[in-house]
Image 1: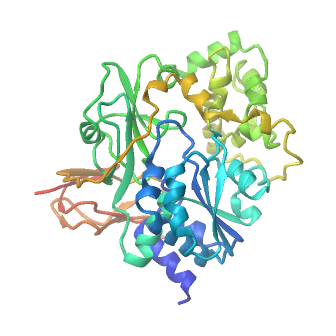
Image 2: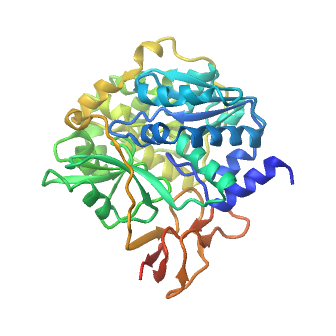
Length: 441
């Protein structure tokens, strides 16, 4: 077996998925030839410090993971794309990067959403991905830095993914970045951070812009980058508490077709055929013909349109609903080349500081330290669907004794998905359609 196949098999066996996004299986990305591998370290959502802490404390593992990804894909160049303001990360890497052949650092501006793959490819390589395209279409593969860390652990140390680096921030007493077992309940993460400092709040798994609202009883997955306590009165709180039916009624009554959401849309500025203001007009007058709104499939759901809209509307949420409907009908937007980017794109990059202020999260936006502590979890809840792909099939039954790192579920034969491993030693306490609960005796 050649080195590329060895790497891909090791990554597949370890159950590695994209650590910062939709959770696409990493071994599938590595099974493609490319010219350059980009380590995504933009971490452009406010309040998140997970990737920064990881790179500051584990620069060698990230660099080794990037080098291994280059070997697997045949890439001649590796790029660490990080914001210029991450000075501590740059200092940690600059002392190491010289020891790795053909790896360089590319500094990004401090704007949102610099971490979007289409935007990052344009910033780093000056290439434009096709609409509905992927980085491989322009000779690149993009991995989150924690994914690269996991690739190193899988290939060099033979360790599966059982832990996750997570930021716990927002309205908490002691914000921190910590490494925890996958499946740890969010309630325990809150306890680690000293608990909420406000009475009314929501919990968000991920960033304040694109993260999902969760309950304290839910658990850390392989894609959990943060647990944020978002207080009442802030824009992320209000947006998530507004029902989609109310949003549609508002769109019908209040959307003035000013086209600000379109003019500031990062995908539109790249030249994509996405005009949120037109979609809002079409949808507000009833359920449209799917073919007339299939451009919504081009939306990255970054949420910048919510920030821009002076009427408090959310084209992002409308697009998200439309995308689900279109996917159910198996309607796709065809892969098409972009004619040209909009000439005004550079002047319309949205500053992160402005975004934080608009969200109402300025008081919670400050650097967070990594807490190098051992988490003695008594119980974990491992979700059978926590990333792209079908629901996994359990390989264990109730009352089975398992060890941390033991394979407990896998994807159906021939279907997309990745392996799932026990994150603590213990007994299988329960199994249902959604999860496997392991309890330490």
